[in-house]
Amino acid sequence: MYKKEPHIQLTSEINTDSAIIMGDPARIDAIAKLMADTKEWAFNREYKSIVGTYKGKKILAISTGIGAPSTAICIEELNNIGVKKIIRVGSAGAMQPNINLGELIIAEGVVRDDGLSKKYVPEIYPAVPAYRLLKLAHKYKPEAIYGIIRSHDGFYVDDNESVEQFWSEQGIVGSDMESGILMVLGRKRKIETLSILNNVVLYQGDLAQGINSLVNGEDLMAQGEISSLKLALDILSDKELER
Image (cartoon, rainbow, N blue to C red):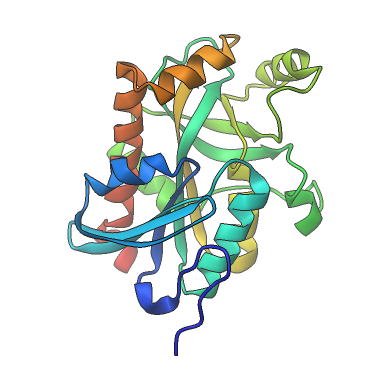
């Protein structure tokens, strides 16, 4: 008898150790077009999931909604059903002026400026990806932007502009809301993790314009989204991970 997880509504019946997570449930439809033998599994709250194959590898794709809390719920429940490799594919805002729309930002580490990860471990605990997955990212996408990103909890705080300027001056390359909790939980639960982000907002650019452009599928960002999904699939299906 399979035990169903309460939020993602999945069980170990999915029979895979590899998952790609993404904030937007609509992105599940995009990744489904890149996979074979796809099967819809569940759609509860923000958690929409499919299982398919890519280069012969069985992979789960599931949405998490926005932010650390809903992402953590997903990761914890995926761990309960045997998932041990998780790549986040999401969107980011650039924190440096030389990063173009649709360019991929891959996190080598994360400034944990979210609230939830501090409930798991102190702030001095690092949030870093799994070396094997990061190495494979370099193999498939050496031209991506690699560096430290910042994960935060909100776009509309009163001092957001000055906070972003401060972190930009420290060399942070991009920002999102989920990578910090992903990597902290990955280390605690012995899950290999990586975060691949599609840049949708230029540094000091208009947030609303960038997000609306992503929703409307404008060319550069749409290409970046597909590129990020394909990279995650290439990494998780690489035979090197079977060793």
